[in-house]
Image (cartoon, rainbow, N blue to C red; front, side):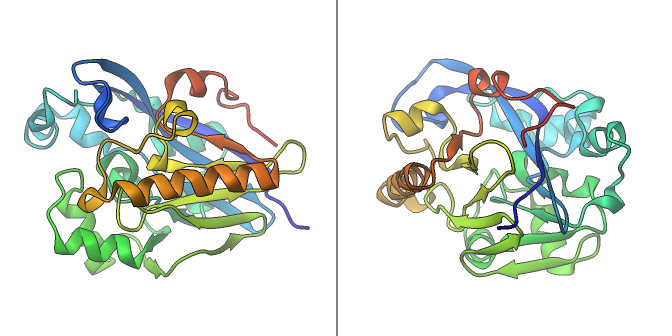
Length: 265
């Protein structure tokens, strides 16, 4: 059976926010430090990015930060992002460039997952039709207008609108995990050495979401039951396939992962 070759967790920023953003109806007034992660996956057929983090310019430029990120206060502090945490900087440390990325798989369109698309021009972008349709139909403050404009024009990146689950590459499967957003997608990755990995994305921000089966704080159209069903499905898949579940914004969990340039294989 074909498998992915290597998996790199990439810390693209840190962000402080009220815990109830991650755990629905729990953690009001309690602030946590969370990683904003992307993942580089090397397969026999090429390289994939799962998510791309934030738009660095909106963090580094005071005027842009004030316009786009400061209004999220006090529940969200603007992310803290070092230039070395930009996607092209990580690739350069591996002797790669954006041209070496075959596709970008966007788990969902929120600013901390899709904002960095401007850093990977020319890359094919995969996004779910339901995710894009919902973002266009209903305002979502976590989705930047220019991301939707880019999807419509395809000016910087060719967008491929996908429907449901599919094989992304050998050993890499797209998993439907709606609830947090309408078309949220997780990813199942088979590796040659260790157990398979399930990248939960924001279906499970924290290990607590998985252990206690707590929905994310924000659920599209308040569909908490859908979000919980996705958590339970990912857990069942992990048991059946003897896979590891990787929550997306859990700092303690991230610190236990291989630290770049180390990888999982």
